[in-house]
Amino acid sequence: MKGQKLKYYLTGLILVVLVFAVAGCDFMSLLTTPTTTTKTTTTPTTTMTSSTTDTTTVTWTPPVTQTQNPELSSYIDVVKKVRPSVVAINAEVTVLDIFGREYSEEVAGSGWILGILDSSTLIVTNNHVIDGAFNITVTLEDGMVLPATIKGADALSDLAILKVNKTGLTAAAVGDSSNLQIGQAVMALGNALGEGISATEGIVSRTGASLAVETGQTLTDLIQTSAAINPGNSGGPLVNMSGEVVGITSAKLAALGVEGMGYAISTRTALPIIEELVQKGYVVRPYLGVNLQTVNAWTVLQYRLGVNYGAFISAVGTNSPAEAAGLQTGDVIVKFNGEDIHSADDCLAAIHSAKIGDTVSISYWRGDTQYTTQATLQESPPPG
Image (cartoon, rainbow, N blue to C red; front, side):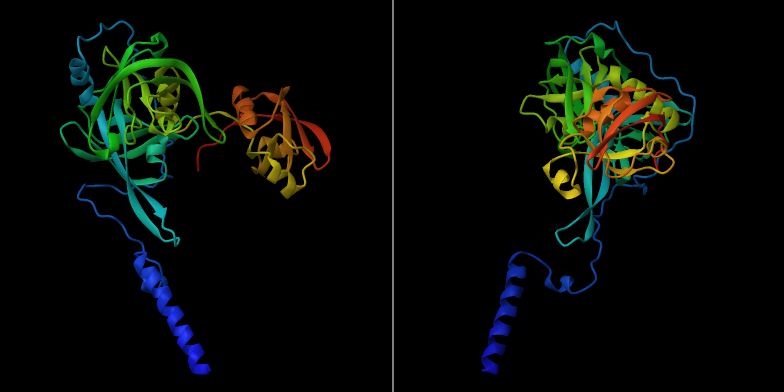
């Protein structure tokens, strides 16, 4: 009987090993300490962590917005003018496999040359291209590969500035996106699919569009275009027929839509943020000092809330305006300065629409009781 049981155990063990083998798993590695595997590359790189942002305050003058340049005669002429200012961005990010082991994965994006700061060249891209990335490089039109560092980044607007130690590069002309008209011809240039810079053409389909990207992040004043925007295009320029940048394309936004609906962040919205990123390394906004999530049925059950809507406070910052106002983790904000709050997005939008130094009224629920307090908004602290 014991021999028969042993036979069953051995048979079961063999079947488990065979299953892992057929699935392509390294069975022995599961019994040992996980190791980190890193894809090698022949591209010269420099190690750069996502938390390294240059917050040194500098004086910098943004480029003059072009308004009256004549249109070029063809798409070919537009590409010839813009292409020297467009760069491919490559980097690595750390991801986890199904067993929780870390390995590095290559990511690709695009950018365009903004101008010169001291002895360095500034490059505009999307924040999600470089968020959490290291070994960031940019490839110029002539194939030269340069290591890049992060000058500034802002997750809320999905914009970032890279810096490379080289001068003499061609900066892009910046146009006025407020003059765009529906039906106007535009082109998108970028490192589509990570295969090098390519160009696509289309028209302006809509202006002033808004899209909720994720909780707490809604991008506004977007340009909708029929020009194809693919993974790798993120951060590249959307240009008019004068060869002027009127938007920063985002494959992250294109993924939220359907075929033939790409989006770009307008220069009208982007330029003030870009200026602040260059000068400070981050964007200053009104700050309450809370982490928020939208109340849903699960939140109500889990925390036994007395209200089924609003912005649930999951954390309160130390020495923040929220702490000074008496707000606590578990409170639910339902009204902010007279505005009804139904979600975390509502509350964040209300905070950001206020001004630094404003004293605001906040109505909230704690358990089964509703309270009202006041908080004086501060300047948002530097990242990190």
